[in-house]
Every structure is written in structure tokens, then in C-alpha cells.
Image (cartoon, rainbow over all chains, first blue to last red; front, side, top):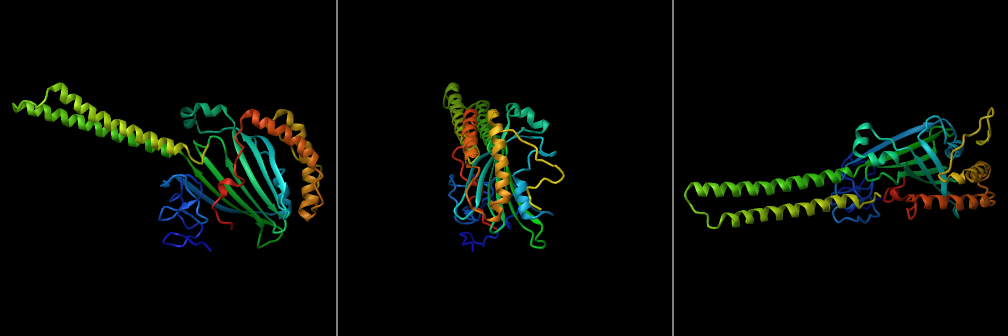
Length: 265
Length: 88
């Protein structure tokens, strides 16, 4: 079924969690060739998809209610005692398709809850509500409901994509099974890589200056007159160091902006 | 038992709309939708949409509120982040 370009046939779920995921498309795995899989091949905006830090989650649960009841309850589930963080709920798109499926988009606003340590680093985020979009398809003929939920705010900080499939429980037709998958990723990974690259390049530039300094002093100690004046030599060494630092800054900027201009808002 | 039936007087709590002035329109529409969903849609009855008018009024209000608040829902592909995933 999946005609993969990779050297090994792709089996959904066989990629170990946290391994090769395309950083621009949450949940899309990257095969050995670096091509997004499974087909139809997604065209990655970046020419070389990074291996992003993505946490993958999968689980299955059962509700001891009929599929009809669950899909009806789905539209009435807010508010409930466990949803105090959900502030508003709106249907912003809805349509019955020609084959009698109901497609809807629900917009939720939630309080932006962060751990205490994150509040220090992102004080601006605290005041703002989080916006979440939930798209769904209800297919009464096949008794299947598929939902995809993801945050459209704070996404650079953390992106969570959840996909659920609600079906009649194969063991008990009066029950409903829910297959849930989630992909959690953070662009901060890209930012810390940029910081690392910059730090490394600046260190290298500093080493260049140090060695030049040594060479100069050693030459002087041995009575060798340096071929050029001190000012010229120092200027050259500083210039080289500055070039390296500039190149490093550009690379770091590139990495940081690459990390930023992604699927995430 | 009809899924929408009130058992022992339970009634769904009510949420606010993101547009403060749209909350009443939203709740009116939600009531209509819940009845239509359970009694018609799930039973395969494609008779027509009795909630169409209410929905239009509600959407006029909420789409404006979304624009005013600058909420970036525009242009988002339906089931967007789900693209490329196999249907299981």
C-alpha cells in the first residue's frame, strides 16, 4: 500500500518515538533518504528536513456508550468540571458534504498555562489566551469520527497536534473506541542549536586570536622581528576573527530563522 | 434512549463565544444543531438544514469578532496538520 522511496517499507507507528520526524510537518516521518513519508510525499519547504525533537504519543481508550451518543456528546462536552481552562467555544465552519458527512471547525480559547520556570522566560505569553483549532469529520454511514486538534498560538514555543479516530468498539457494538495520537514538538530546539553554533564559532575565532598572540610573543622572545608591525598583525588577526564571527552570526541567524519560519505560526 | 434526551433534568452547561456579543446567537444555534444532529443527521436524514438561518446570523457575528481580535484562523487547511498521515 505504501510505496516508499526509502530502503525499508514504511509501517505506520514503526518509527521509534522521538526519532526521525520532519520538523516542518508535525507527525510526518522522514525515511532514510530524508524524504517525508508516508506518500503522497509531502513537499518539505526546507531542502534538508532537520531531525526535530518530537514526542510521539499513542493510546487507545473505550467509552461504554454507543457511537451515536459519543458523537452527540462531542458537541456538548464543554463546559464540564474538567474544562475550567476552556474559556470560549465557537463553530467557525460547518458543512454537510454531498456524501452526508459533517465537517466542522471549532475554535477554542484556553488559558495559557505554563510551568513556573517557563513563565520567567516567556512573560509575554502568560497574559495571552491560547487558541486551539479542532477540525472534525463525522461519517454516520461508517460510524467513524476523525478529529484533528492543534494550537495556532504559542506554536513556536510548543506545538501539539492530536488526531483521534472514534469508532464502534469491535468487541462491543454498544461501546466506542478512541484511537488517539499526538505529536508534541518545540521550536526551541532550533533556537538552542543556533546558540550552540554561534558559541562554537565565537570560540573558534577567539582561539585564532589566542594563537596569533602566542606566535607573536614567541617570535619576539626569540629575537625574531615580526615581519610586519604589531598594528598590522593585530589588525589581520582581529579581521580574521571578525570574519569568522560574522559568518557564525549569519549561520546562527539562518538556523534561528529556519527554526522560526516553519509550519508553526 | 435518544442521545439528546435529558435524563433527570440534566442540561448542558453553556459556553461563551469568543465574541462577547455573539454568545446568545451561538447558544441559539447550538440548541438547534444538537436536536438536528441527534434526531436527523445521525439517522441518515438529509432533509435539509433547519438551523441554516441561525447559523448564518451566528457566523456573521463570530467571524467579525475573530477578525477584530486578529485570531489567525484564516487560510488554515482543513485537517491541516493531518496531511500525509495514513487513514487507519
